[in-house]
Image 1 (cartoon, rainbow over the protein chains, first blue to last red):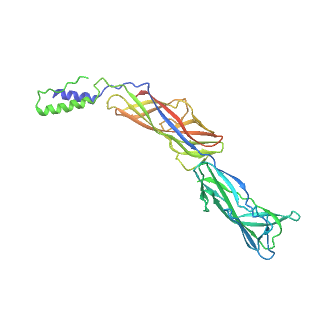
Image 2: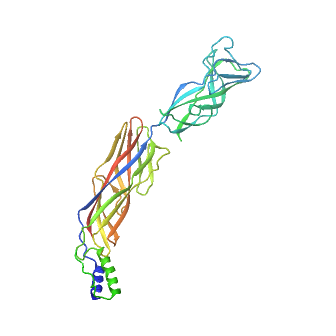
Image 3: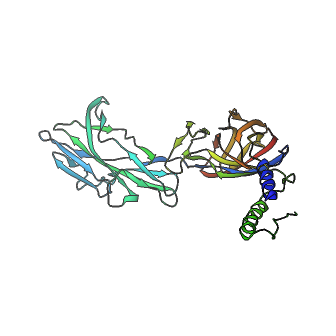
Length: 187
Length: 189
């Protein structure tokens, strides 16, 4: 029994501490980052309402569909090319979006813009025309109209934007031009 | 190792008690014959800067506490940023039940960088949450005293943040930059 007590005492006392110096260890850590290709949109074609006539007494409009199906005239507006050709330029605005393959993105476009006119006779300024009902169509959502798209395996998508040009009665002959600005961001 | 167990000439219950005690001693170093101290360091988690894009150049800082700040970059959805985590384990080599402290040095050997396609990522500055250590520059050691050790095994987990500078000429990249960390135990105090 005496030996038992002696052994227990030794265990409780432990051993003298060793000086520890020069003991090194290396860990291979890692730093990670994903740098995404910036997303950009490049204009490929303008939103073109073509040539049209307006009524002296009735307001009208022409609507260009974003899916490229042509123009729809209403009220006092009519195609100036009827029977004479020259309407081939009617088209929605088109943009190419490029960025990181497979990433989704959001396109922001105005709902309405204003077109400034330059009189054909004399070159003076004509009253502005309103363009509204701007609609966005994305190739990545074929058949649907949405503001959220997804870049394909090549990191690309296409955007088309249509709208409605409102033509008041008695609109004077002029060339009209507007700026349509869109913004694409990763979502 | 030579051990002398209690004599079998004892009563039966004493024989059992002595046998158990002898087994208990076998797991401990012999008095005066402690093993050499050892230190290990494990990388538990990577330093994560997350997902973002930049036009040409930008930087992002993830601190050891997890706060994030950026310059000329646009974060996007994806992996979340966070500091690296390492665990230092010191085995003093004996079971002495006395408090001790460790004087250690921490070193990130060099600038961590990687070129991937048109993207270059460089980490030239680190920080840790080790007590008393703020900025950790590559190639410079920082000394830290870790207190509160008592048992044979003493572990400390610490985090490392950093600032990633990105220069981009084209495309994107997934960077995986080696981040070696060297810890040296200078003294047991």
